[in-house]
Length: 432
Image 1 (cartoon, rainbow, N blue to C red):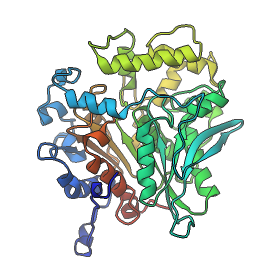
Image 2 (image 1 turned 180 degrees about the vertical axis):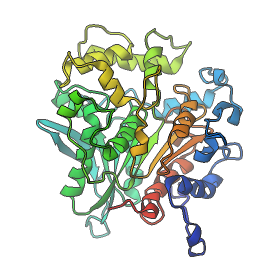
Image 3 (image 1 turned 90 degrees about the vertical axis):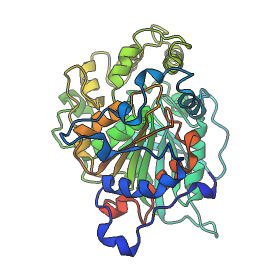
Image 4 (image 1 turned 135 degrees about the horizontal axis):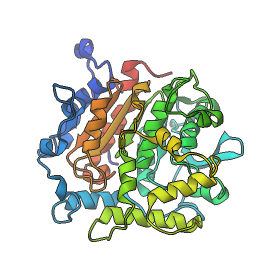
């Protein structure tokens, strides 16, 4: 990130009476000031209020942008969506060997449960004398089965540190070095990991007096973790999304707020059960490039964990990982799916999870995402009435390829969202 990439949002004293009072209003004000970083065509975006019509129904996002949905998986019609996606994804792993060292970052192990620790790379922002600044710490989560070998994580971590944020790049259960040192600790795709995320926030704030608040950024399935964390932080004691079996192995709600600096979710997999349906059959590279490559990642996981089959079937992978995890082989998979569901699926409810969010939350996706459907963002927005939750659909960026698409807008959006003076958490008053 270069200095010219940052377009700071200003809230002058003259406009104090019209300052935003929630995340949605903040996004409208912020985008108006950052839109100049986009080219003329890219300035047409969908904000939260654009995604819902006067009757409260989700708008057709592809009609809004004039983008036929059938073009998304065609190289000739969606070249930039494909290229930007490829530029932000990584096939490298940091499991048996750690990723190359990052300047100013150190290795930390964070206790989140009995005999469970998560691995991360932590850097503290410091003043000219080398003393830690009193500032916020932003936690970064990679995408599906990702780890700290992902260059996108490294680059964003360095940019945040340069702008005086503490940064923690986290690897979850079954990811990266956690997978290497704890191979019997299986991934539950967000069930135990969601509770872990609250523990991570508490550990940072309690262990480092220089940390004022924590913030969270997730990508792809990591964005799902971010959304579930926002829900889980504010859930009720009798939340119907948590079955009695799960309630016995998870902790009750805490009055303590987590990630009070805010949460950002880039390219979340909102209808992930539809994704499971798509992985029930194999896809060829030239026929459906993103899905083929995703299924290769699923195969790699099955091979590494020596599951009964090596296929690209995500549904089967989840079943195998659940069975070998603390949940056990007798755990009803339907209860796990209810916990993880973000939008209704075949008549099964989602539980309106984001209505429980009590910190600023911003979801971002792209209309030219070749892997997921941007319409899901509008569907989620139409169902969510919580003003702390805002949504944004950009014209470009593919799947999590927002930095290659437009580095200025991508970094400015993040830096302004977490700005301790003009970010939504400060304006709304959710910070500690």
